[in-house]
Amino acid sequence: MIQSRHAKIPATIVTGFLGAGKTSLIRNLLESANGQRLAIIVNEFGDIGVDGELLAECGSEACGEDDIVELANGCICCTVVDDFLPAMTALLERDQPPEHIIVETSGLALPKPLVRAFGWPEVRTRVTVDGVVAVVDCHAVAEGRFADDVDTLDHDAPLAELFADQLACADMVILNKTDLVAHATLHAVRGEVEAGVRGGAVKVVPAVSAIVPAQVVFGIGAAAENDLDARPSHHDDEGEHNHDDFNSFHVALGPVISPQALTDRLRIIAAAHDIYRIKGFVAVDGRDMRLVVQGVGDRFQHYYDRDWTPDEVRQGQFVVIGAQGMDRDAISAAIRA
Image (cartoon, rainbow, N blue to C red; front, side):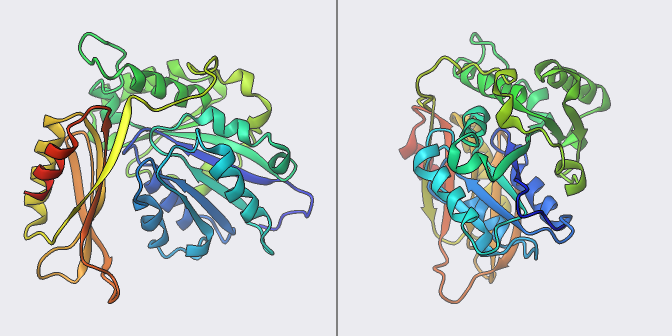
């Protein structure tokens, strides 16, 4: 795809709660990009860039390691001036700028402030928000994880607002993990999602493992930076958005013997504490490959992604994201046990 010298570069903002499948969606987009030159800006709430490294290791010709920019240890919706705008400017000043830019927000980011950033003079003349894509975990919605019921989920009211804001800002919703729910449940979840989006113009696309081709996601043509008023947010009247309800930290651990025993232990830990997400890399005794472990709620998966390189220290690293006030010391000790 060849762009006019004066055409704006389209950008896709991928939003969605922790563990919904944002990184999986982007990996699938890379595989179906049909030769487009892509760049990706990845935001991590924690201080270890797990998602960026997973994308860099996917081996796609559409996007090399130099085309992936990581913004770690913060939320992109709160660090637009300090982090996002410099990253975007650097991409645009390349001898060969990207033909399409993908921005993956952290799972705790509000999309609207990021869309607003595309209205900055340094950006708006050269880039347009082609679409805001919200990835939704059907199973998590079905479990009521985002329910706005302070009597039963006393720390989840901020999650309900975050979920509502992500839907209200979206031009497309990917209903991911549809294979994990029954047909009737999927119908109910779809109804809940459709009630939260902005009318009939928003496409709702069911998916398994976030497999949606680039031809579906790219080319929405929303120019979202021009219709911010049509994208309501619970935080429109706030002078500055903060994440006081959430916290993250990382845990280092040595090689493990059994991946299954580790994930079983993590599942128990997540259930016992206010943990929303655990993800990271682990060394396994007797194996030369690095183990990826990811979990949201009580659902965990693990797989080997690549060999450890000779210059790497074979030490595991986990990012733990959860409610403010979670017992960091107890959680760290339990993970290392």
